[in-house]
Image 1: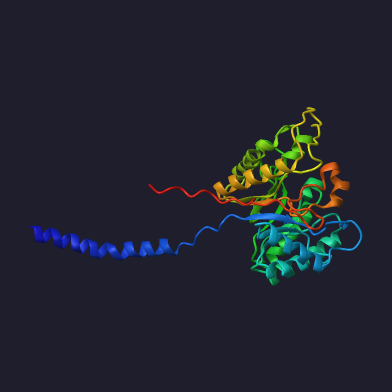
Image 2: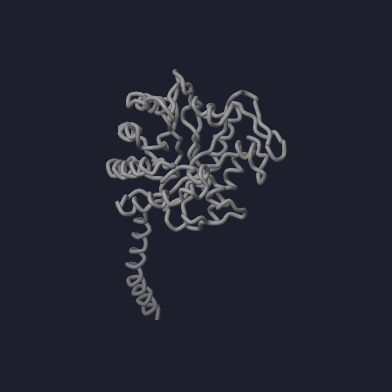
Length: 339
């Protein structure tokens, strides 16, 4: 009897072990999830340069700024704004330095310029497939123009599809626009046409302009960022949601502004608060295995004419030589202890 039972068990093991082996091989071959991105927004319009007029940044200046970024910061991923006016030199310079790129094709009211951006975007995406890892058809187009240029965003996305561009495509905008200006968050018309979703989240500006979330101090900014990501993730199940801009101004030191609805003063500009917001947010994103893009790499003086007193004070690095930078910013999730 014992011999019969042993024979049956042995036969069962011989029958099932190939299946178990195959399953084990499949598990071993399953591709690992890509590590979350920790990037920084990069614009070379530093010093006296202005994207509204005058000469564009030179190739040499783009390379010099990227050298600073590599030498003085831990970031090896950048998000760029535009592919025209010589800005496409960024991609070759990034590739030479081992920097990955999220590339935004700038879209606005000039249809001919948009067409040029789309064509150039297709060209650089094909030329640098290992360096340009994601694409966006525009940045905050709806924030600037409402729904008036939705057709231009759609035209750009469709052009990427027709060109069979390999990189995943989105259109970047504020979390509020991706929620279709609704609470609870609702889908927009782009829900089914994009591969991923890029949201910009700035409690600093909400502290001035919003009545829904009018008061978020620096100490609570990281939690605010994650809460808005959660809102968008719930509205777009299955989509990869990335916070494509977040940060805090560092100057004028100690300055603040009142919320236009409540009169509250909840945001205080300082280097300490900027570092707190960036470090705490990156830490929480890493724990969730979510990606994020710090705004921004280098401070840009020209932004003050568009955004007021605080516009030129968002860089983790100074826009002027010697480009002093905040350090020790990126974060990795804590590894769980084995019991």
